[in-house]
Image 1 (tube, rainbow, N blue to C red):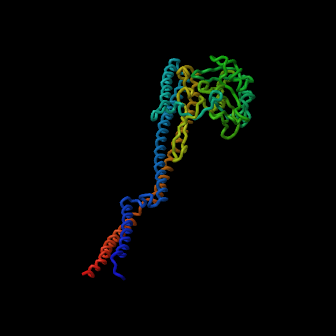
Image 2 (cartoon, rainbow, N blue to C red; image 1 turned 90 degrees about the vertical axis):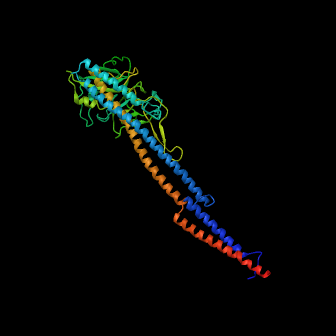
Image 3 (cartoon, rainbow, N blue to C red; image 1 turned 45 degrees about the horizontal axis):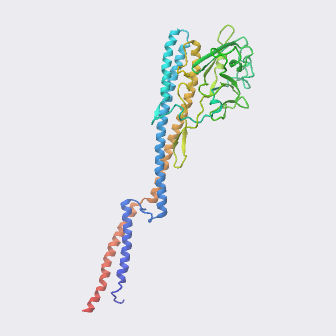
Length: 448
């Protein structure tokens, strides 16, 4: 091999090897110090891009989980207020049953009325419950209610009667039970119909004769006293057959669960001001004896549609997804005493100052309880769903983080092994470079 001094290829080759080893050592050192095998886009452009998208996804999922927890907290606050109202209504029903007993004097009923007034006022306080400054149960965050007929109409259905019983065509004296057995309502019997509207009780008594259920609210026995010249209630058929039992807040027909016939009555007009708090039928024979079996059948009207005023869709939306409009929607209906039929426009609670009024109030409270339980079910279902959603989000976040870790996190054992190897090779190259630089110095001996 010729002895040269201008181009020391041994030194050049050793220097290139040294630089390569130094780069490998720097890369391994970066991985060991940061714990990541991708520290810049240049290290792995596609891996870096995928990893960053996953990091965005993880941050979004963590915020989704926070949203579900906040939403669940709001649901618990609202559900607690409704639960308190249900407790109050249970107590009020007890008071009404007490007031309906004639062992009480008018003074006793007046005292019970004062208790009722205070409890009904507390129902309003419950409806004004707040979360983060939002008044929850005041209809502010209700689902949509259509404008048709001024809102939804209070509606009840009774499936205790024989199928094919038409409230507008069949006389009460012809009514039979579900098995076709006659109820025993006689033309000579007397019927007292009472209902509560706007906190006031209206009633009338008439001989059954050949009147239909629809006649009870119009021609039978004259007008309701003290509300003459008006029709607040009507018997009707909501759809093409007798299984339709109302029209909901979206304008859609409501049908019985089993698709079988029912007898229906409803408020003549829509909205809270026109709502009927409760309807009570009391049948007696010609001697004034109460016909309990028949009254039991007449008392089986169940609310199918509650009265609500028209409103746009203002329901709460809880964002639970990483993309737009991935949300859980929950509506909060009005839980004030007036919306529950427990109070009139004059802010007076329903009256129980007489036996008749106390009996009418019992059904009003039953309907109010049904409304509260319906809202409580909605809130409970939302809580359960948000809990499942939170668990799913946490799992998704963990799995996404694991996937991101696979792409970006360094295998520390391997990184340290590579660093040690690169470090040893770098030191070895440095020593060899010194030897290569010394190989040309032998030329100087030829010049002596």
